[in-house]
Image 1: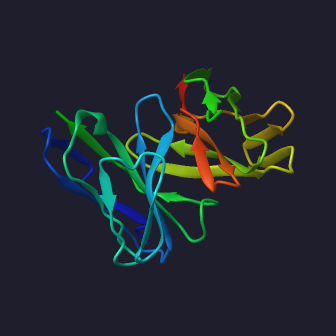
Image 2: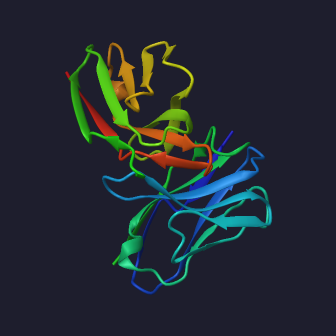
Length: 112
Length: 111
């Protein structure tokens, strides 16, 4: 059982470039989340989704977009990468809200 | 305030007990969690405690909750090298349905 799978694991972007971080889960979870983890800081919620076709902003949504066309997939889009978006990004899913989250292994992104 | 606070580093000898501390701010929190993050991996739920409990024990892990002081601790008995990781506490704020994480404590095991 793969759980939550994120790709890529590492990426370096130039300022102004765009990219999509992929996240897929095979547990039929309705709830999916994107967090970012900055050094020495806790995780901050970027966007979340409570089901296919439904997305909502978290604490730090600026500079990001998401879509949820299927239950399995929840991609995160960076349109114009900025150095402030250098971080480790984690996707998570759950069957019912925040009570028990399953995390992917993360994407380390550097914007130079 | 927003913050969930943890010390950033803890170093213990193999075989000793580790105690990782956390303070939180919201008295309405329903669940408090400990997550473990091993190098290159995502966060894994280690254990959790419901806010009406004072203590929870699960094998080598003991969670203590002091609601009056808003203090949460995780004790790992007989610490092993495999326990080396970053440990995050988190509180689930019921009203906002918001999970707030601490900064993480990096646990290092010395031989």
